[in-house]
Image (cartoon, rainbow, N blue to C red; front, side, top):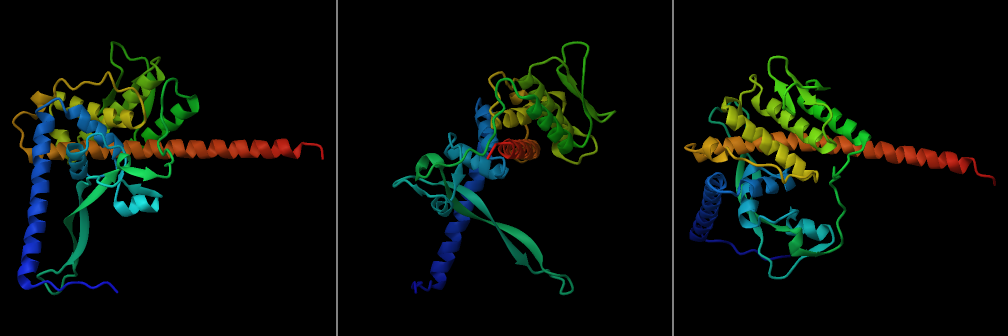
Length: 312
């Protein structure tokens, strides 16, 4: 049985003070990171980090981006061990925030305890900092000419994610697509390349998730340039996640849109951008996974038919 040292009252106070100081520094680092992202050309780099960690919170994406911007897959020491990999000796961990739910008693004795969230600092390591068993590739890329079945699966997933019609029409002028707030529908220009069609679809779906006038989120109040930056940011994250070419993406209005806004407000924008991207990434991932499963099933059934027709 492991022996645990009993802390003195002073040691307990020192330990609590150190933990509080660490958390304060982490939150300050996030705040500084928000301003740095908007005040420099690092915005794209940050969105790339978001594209790899759509399941992580905005705060932790920011911390990963600031400490190890080239990270591609992170996990805790124990998780890597369970996956058959070992953290390399001498590697420095990436400090992030781990949520710690706890029960908080109400001042009113008749009310039940409510669940609150506290945070603690913890460490994760990138796959590049580990060695061991190869890992399966979980992401299905959409590169080059996308198969028709994949296109159908992607747009079925997008329709499900936003809950409104998406149609393909010949749009007069040079527009690739638009989201009509009045009609609550999305229209995509016909005749474009597969990749451009998908990216336009994602961009317009982002407008629905971020700028529907019935929503009560910060991005709804943005001006036109702000709305375009936000929708394009979501499109970049999702496209990058699925391996689509993102070299043509640019954010010329980023400085003007963010200028003069406090970090708290900018953090809300980034959080909502990330949530919208997560919604679309999850929907597309599930749609492609279902397609792949059905294709495997069809192949299996065809093999059974072939084998059944063989002479014995």
